Length: 113
Length: 113
Image 1 (cartoon, rainbow over the protein chains, first blue to last red):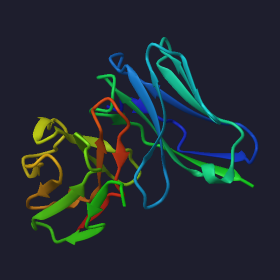
Image 2 (image 1 turned 90 degrees about the vertical axis):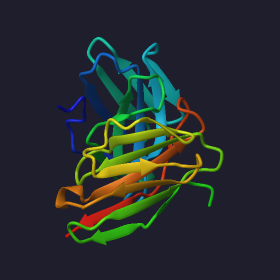
Image 3 (image 1 turned 180 degrees about the vertical axis):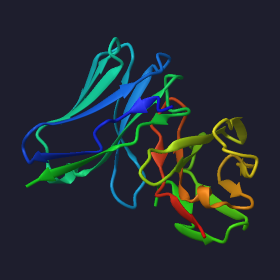
Image 4 (image 1 turned 120 degrees about the vertical axis):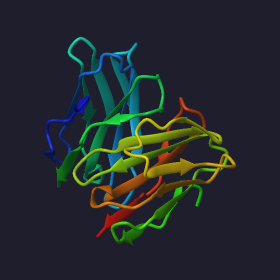
């Protein structure tokens, strides 16, 4: 069963606008959530994370929101830039860190110039 | 470079052949992880080391898969009697400790023919 779900396989956004990537999870034991970005032929790169004790974490153009009651998190990128075009993976952990991450299937974001 | 290095980048194996995939983590990183990423899927956890100790191997799909990290630095993932379903990208990641950011290598793409 897929414990971390990214239901949108792809998303296209105009440059300068906001990109919103969504992620849902089913395991209530998850307490740490991360977003990774992946370019072709490269490994995933850590982007931003959030602990379950928070509902928002911001880092520059990237903000992650966590709604624990809905078991939902989202990544907002604003303003979107062409270099943001990549596959974005949502991941979760039960152990408060990076041990045994459970990943979603990814969303391919394309920024249209 | 100072990143996680994996070799080979690409490996084609005949069904039934044994393969060994190598991971050189970032120097000084205590934690090391292996993930398997099938086409169109997110990475799936295989195993986790802290120094030379294999703390979690619950994700290894069968007893044909074996991982080691004998001196607490370089790790090898060995797959015996490869099957077509083993075809995937094998990702290695390391982190300073389990609760810090994990850095991924570029992966080894294994194709079993």
